[in-house]
Image 1 (cartoon, helix red, strand yellow):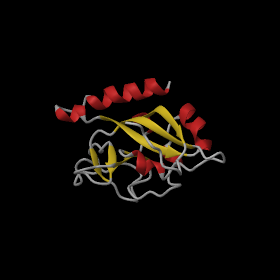
Image 2 (tube, rainbow, N blue to C red):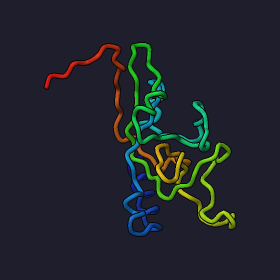
Image 3 (spheres, helix red, strand yellow):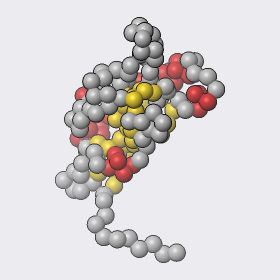
Length: 158
């Protein structure tokens, strides 16, 4: 069910893009979470309506990061020390700089409030590393990564 929603949304969004924009539609991004949230995300998807526990600097949506190290800060260790992070498929589409009061992306034409909206918000439009999604159809929990942070150095043989 979740995959069908995501796939349909991808086809819908691709119709409004041209050339290189099409190749920028989808990204694989990280989302750190708690053990208690894993099952709900798998069953119901990422839900922007319950976002904001960890802040909403760029809007009131679900946050994804290009860098796993950033998402690690939101992967709170469980009682046994395990952390959980999703590698998600995310339809970022056309994006604008986010703002904490946004509950949805801003209009594509700021002077025309009834214009179509951007698809997502980011921390930096030139080189985005954080993406905010306001519609659960635009993301899919592709892989779950379960891990522990190591306290000792690991020696790799060459």
